[in-house]
Image (tube, rainbow, N blue to C red):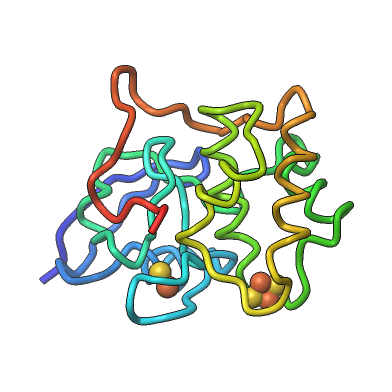
Length: 177
Ligand code: FES
Ligand code: FES
């Protein structure tokens, strides 16, 4: 039997009935058609499924859809604003920060949370913050370059939904390892 939830996804309120065991990543992909959020493993390791939950980057394969009742979720589809790509999306393009692109949405969602809290990170800080996101193609070098490049942009740390005041971490499926 489904559980009714109301969740705002990319600024649109959605009323859904979901199975209690349904994962957020499957709700996004299979119920809402937001297939930019990828599934790259079944071990919570790859980070390809990273989205923002109330402004924090989380691995959506580790969150139940019912846990998002009343929350704001942002996916890669919600990062562009008024038809203009997010500076991180532009920077990945400019710096060739991808090859197959499978990891890219998760990388961008994780990196955007980093820049929101640390607008001028060191290379080491970028590498550390992306430890929970795996890439099989690029060797990471251009991904790191892209994030450092986006940090120079005044809106590089823009995230569509800021975290609630006073909340600086998240305990369900946070990225970073
Ligand atoms: Fe790999 Fe979520 S699908 S961490
Ligand atoms: Fe292919 Fe990262 S670009 S997995």
